[in-house]
Image (tube, rainbow, N blue to C red; front, top):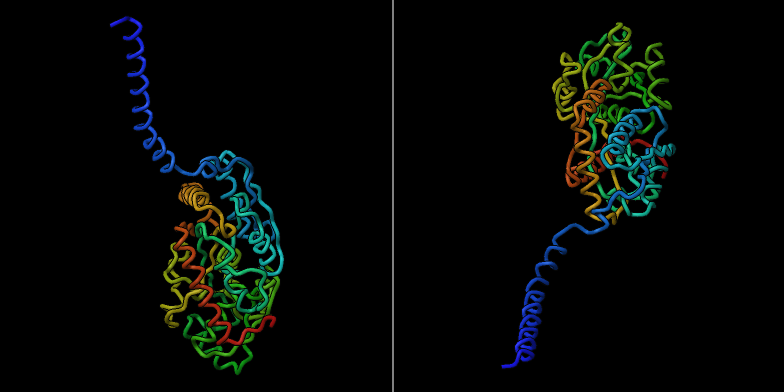
Length: 340
């Protein structure tokens, strides 16, 4: 056989071998590509993220959001910019989030009040369970039942008796449609007491009037009330959580003090616009949960009377659904009036 013939046969063999290798390798490469995360999720984030806070700077929700934003900026390598959009009981900021592009670059934080507002304002620009995707709950916060010292009651049972003996003249004050407000309404529903709610624009003005005796009772977050409790100017009777707090272990819960099943807590949590890719939701959930477990973050929140409460998206979604149903029932039974 000629040398030329041998060379030709060798070339054909090499070509067939290359084709076999290519055909066998192609499925492996395709499988590896399909098993990996989408390119968009892998690259996320490629630019700064906006975090909408639906309340003014300096408040509790803003405090929670800013600490998370700082830590996310460090871990994601992109700036997380706070965008405060206060107004209309938090609905202005939430509506802005609902209308944002579903690309992960607009994140929002909500509070328990967002599950109250739909029951008192009938014309809502969004639906919590449809227009958003839950990412994670971030914090829990109990409320403390405090009275002016002119009120002689030293326990919840004594307070209920005092209110019943007042012939409807007893009052309490909080921000309108806040968890503190609905906690008072829940107390009325569960015990049958009659008392008048006095609306305020914030915790500060309500506390001022509680201290001066203009109102008799308030459900307040712990930090602003604690100095006045320690000084003896206010008397704390119980907390609104399901279990006692290590911050004030001497105080019973309202439930264990005689109003069975009573619970009214504030919370924060993060949402994204509906239709945001699942890979982006997962990445942000993991990063926020990691942030909430950092010792320095937990220490700063605990000092402010806030308990970190990271969760899965499903668990946070279930909380939102439960709270919507719970507060709708209280609003109806207590005849809390908003707009129609």
